[in-house]
Length: 129
Image 1 (cartoon, rainbow, N blue to C red):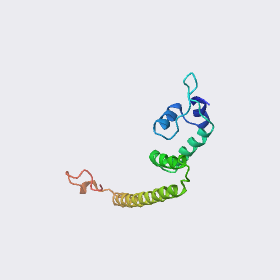
Image 2 (spheres, rainbow, N blue to C red):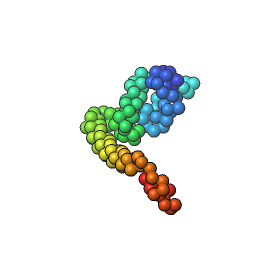
Image 3 (cartoon, one colour):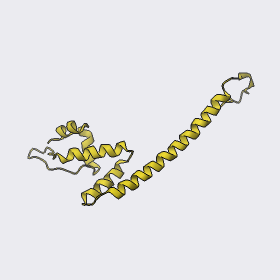
Image 4 (tube, rainbow, N blue to C red):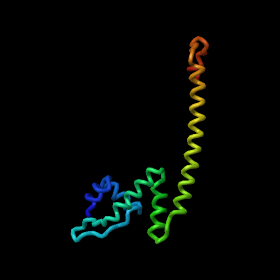
């Protein structure tokens, strides 16, 4: 199938497909005599995998690593597990930081619940921040 057909089938754009190819995510394909890319149906599954990896929060570089392992005939399961473990750790850290931020903002809001503008000096824009 040509690049436009692949883009439509995979729910993406031709520009994205060219980018994936440039980044080594999508393997270069044979070209027709007229120079058109001629993709196989397997390309749809590969693009679907790329999209699922992105939805899981993996970077394109990490997805490329997984694809490289598979392209060399090995199962990437262990590597995927390690990447997902690292992603979970990152998310847990982000959640902890967001919880701390929420608590700080809630405390500031509570302090500002009954504003006392006259208690602010001119060098303080607002004593609640």
